[in-house]
Image (cartoon, rainbow, N blue to C red; front, side, top):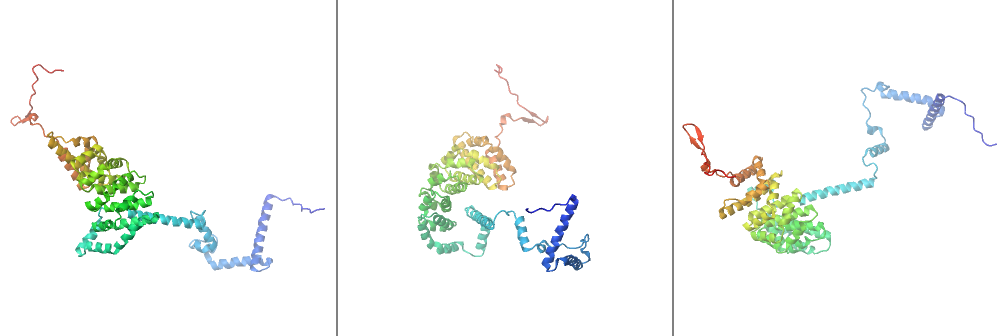
Length: 444
């Protein structure tokens, strides 16, 4: 015969919905009764007693509509332990990631922060004393400290490491090379005594060779060490030049890495701060065309270092060397730097232009023409307008320098006394001279 289904009674939709709700409530009450270990029949009365007990325990304001004045229970007290975990995971922005992935990201972020902090410490400008360093030196001098003795003590304690570092510079491992170069850059960062100790270790030629390494991780510290050495006196700078460092520096000026290009310009600026023979060596290496190109197109931090290199060359260079820089077109990019916000670089550009104008004045006096040939070049580069604008600069040294340049080199010419009007004191008027026309008249 087979099984037969019970025929469904015909009922309306509201009745059917009410029946389903009542069945669901019955099932809930049955589950509650079984959880309490009571018969199902006693479930209804037990639920009513439980509700009355909870109402008495919660106080008179526990009824519906009487929640005013009551403090809501904290969310942490309401949720269970598993509920807390789910809530935090759902509200967390990386809820789609597993714990291992989130831990890996935290480690990478921490590594990036430490690396950024390290680079900030390493790429500071080394040849400019800060206010804190000046204050420290003042305290040392007042307290009777001897900085030279302290530096000697430091170098005495680390000098045994120099021989080991000079040996490590020839290891083929990239990480070892980088660490050895960083160590030498730290040891050479200081007064000339420390620089001389590094030079005496015989590492200069190998450092220059490492400037052409194929890994920037090695090039950067090697360049920093070479740059620190050329901050010494002319003799110490010449040691680096004797190692054929300028060709390597010229190669680094075209590096795609901006920090390398900036450090190379900084190193060259310390070389051009030397004597005229060293400036001529830079000229012979054909470095200044690349510097002037950088001064026009590179990032501002690199342009600053190139400006230092050119201004240093105009300060200590001969007349022929300064003419060479003018012929390369250094006036226009120096004039462009007069509008930047960095007051120190504005002063550097003004000093470079002043050195060029001083040479032009000497040439005008020597030739007897009285015409400075470089004034016109500065005016063509809109440098005069920018210098006039600097007379209202907030920096006192800048506006004083701008005023002196205009007053000395761009001042108004003396008026011709023959065309000046005479004064008639009796009539209280000026008497202008009449220009006589030629007898044959004016010719067109």
